[in-house]
Amino acid sequence: MTFEQLGLSPEILRAIEDQGYTDPTPIQAQAIPSILDGKDIMGGAQTGTGKTASFTLPMLHRLQPYASKSVSPARHPIRCLILVPTRELAAQVFKSVQTYGKYLPLKCTVVYGGVSMDPQVKDLRAGVEILVATPGRLLDHIQQKTMRLSQVEILVLDEADRMLDMGFLPDIKRILALMPEKRQSLMFSATFSEEIKKLANNILAQPILIEAARRNSVSSLVTHVVHPVDRERKRELLSHLIKSKDLQQVLVFVRTKNGANNLAKQLERDGISSTAIHGDKSQPQRTQALEEFKKGEVRVLVATDVAARGLDIEDLPHVTNFELPNTPEDYIHRIGRTGRAGTKGWATSLVCDDENELLEGIEKLIKVKLTKEIISGFEPGTKDGSVKPASKPNEKEHRGHTKEKVKDTHTNNKKSLEFDSKKRIYSKEKPSKEPQDPLFTQPYVPATATSPTKSKSESETTAVASLSLVKNKPDSQPRNQRKEKPIPALFLPISINSPKQNE
Ligand code: AMP
Image (cartoon, rainbow, N blue to C red; front, side, top):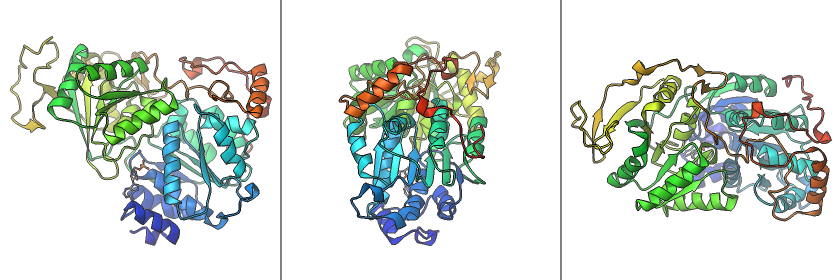
């Protein structure tokens, strides 16, 4: 199967050729013909499979008849809305649309929070056919009447599972209510949960189910290794691994923002150039951290789960879980950063004794028993590694390390921990205090503090909003424990007018 055989226009094929892609990836080969046919899609695709192009290429093809060089905004209504959970993913999808659409006079822009609304307002007022947006900022613009969704023909929900995890469902419903019922809807999710299926039932009409990889699976190109180690020696082991294996580009996951900052500082002290990316960093700081990491100016990028969503770093060879994630699905998301688009990847997890249940949950979800290797000198239970492991070290060398495969002992350690498939969390595992990025974990509240300079219309919005809205501040409470916040009259009642949207 070639891109030509998929029936894409010559302008799009030229852009694909410029990228050097020779063949469509499996998700592209499956999704593109159905999307070109106007079908709704439920795409089970993890990141790194080429899923962005799988919806962007046919979307551009379908919108091509609207391409116009006219400067009149009226000639450029929003025809396609791509909703994504995070700013990084928004920026990345926007870049893909620009890349694949570079030979077409279709206009595209991106809107997300944490930056001034003014340039976004300017772009929207000039008219765009394609809009990439995070839900909260999109609602800000709708409230300011800088844009309308009444002519949307194609809706894409990318990383839908993450959007639900971040509590965006009410925002998504509000947005859907403002869109024509008759449209093509495409939904992509790396993982399938009951909530995702319910959302798909509500949004999609007779969808074609496309799965690029086994559900809840990870790329077969990724080699997973677990290094058992005491919690207090994890940083030391990480430095040791990076130095001894001469790793040049490692994405390291931690659970908390403080943890990210601290680890980056400690690694710096160990002589390993590092930076952190998380929700407390401003957008320019995040962009800079990512750029430095991509260019190889820093060896380690320490990230929290949400901040790392959507990061596409070409040929990223190593992902390390400094701490295992609280929810097994996040392991898939984290590992999806490596082994992308046909390249090999390494996923290393530093696991201490009290993380064994989390490890079990991950293995259960991905249906793979992860190989355990104790690094010599870092045996658990030995403060300085002075006590050597009881079992005989494996002769095999692993990138300069003597590795030892040990018998999996954690199955004896089941206790009474239960994996709650509904909440997708272990009942006894305390959720991290800062599990998510506060900028994205709240229901919609109009932009107030995030815009450095307020336009007249923004000030007006703020005045109206302040009558009924709580201040936009980080909220670490889980969404389902928060009191319902009043919402502006514009969005009441939250009704979905489509018969298929009957949640
Ligand atoms: P995605 O899953 O959309 O995040 O894409 C992952 C990476 O695969 C991106 O860097 C794309 O540029 C790349 N990619 C997408 N389609 C192809 C293709 N057909 N051949 C080679 N690389 C691709």
